[in-house]
Image (cartoon, rainbow, N blue to C red; front, side, top):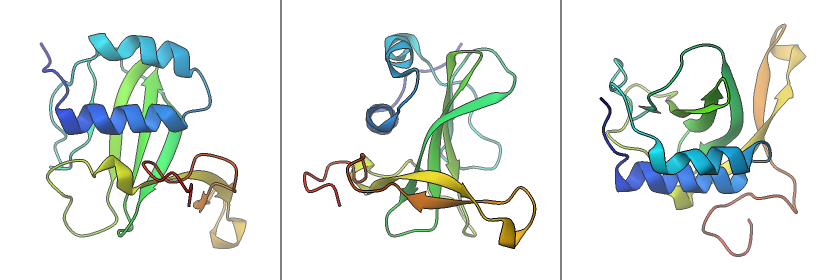
Length: 137
C-alpha cells in the first residue's frame, strides 16, 4: 500500500501538469487517487506512483533553475507513473525542487554528440516556461 503525496510532490505534480501538452485531462483526473510506492533505491526524491509497470511515456520535462538537474512526468499504460528526478551531480537532494524553479524544456536531436543523443532546450516564447513567473521568462 502506497503513501499519499507530500505537499511538495503534489505542488511539483500540479506544476508539471500545467506544462503538459498531451493527455493532461486524463492525467489530472488520476491525481486524487495517486499514491507513492517504494522510494527510489538511489536516494533521489523521485516519486514513483503505484500502478502498472512497463514502458514509460514522458509527458513533460523541466530543468531545475540553478542546477544541472531535471525532472519529468511520466505515465505507464495511460496511468500516472510518477515524477522522475534526474541528477547530474554527485548527490541528489532529499526532496523535489520548489516548483517555481522549474523551467519547461523540449528535447532536440544532437547528432553531433552521437547517435540517438538528445539535448534539452528551453521552450520558445509563447509556451509555458517559468512556473510561478508571470513574465514567462
